[in-house]
Length: 158
Image (cartoon, rainbow, N blue to C red; front, side, top):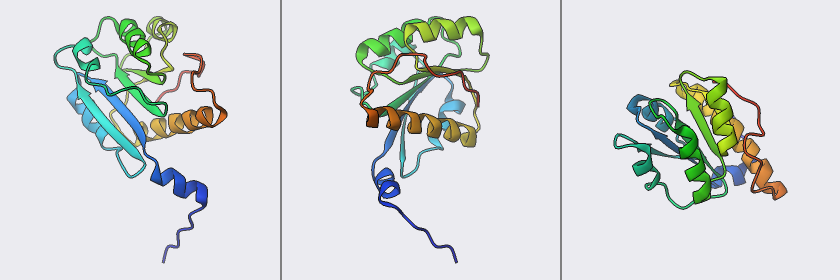
């Protein structure tokens, strides 16, 4: 028999849903991201078969406690996408890349990305990374630091 004990803090975390928006032309990766959805994590996948600029229009209004995962694969101007999202008010933009490079990392971080990480299609790995950002974002929100310096976190890999 398993007995679960819920503290007030853990109960509050289960009631509020952390939002994750995944933007990609890679249908398999979007399917993997969608698998992390549960009672505490709401996932919206945006398929970008018509180009990223068209996809960005599908994002809802920016939310303080939301994470945007942008797949850099196949897109030539990822820094422009990051700048556009920042201009729209999104704060936590994480660029994922199947072939990470220091040059691209520098460019997207300078453009305002919160982080740049290696891409994974394994749901358990994606969940672990999203959970890491959830904790960071909740901590920043509690401290009142709602506009963190872009790129201040270390590069993290799946």
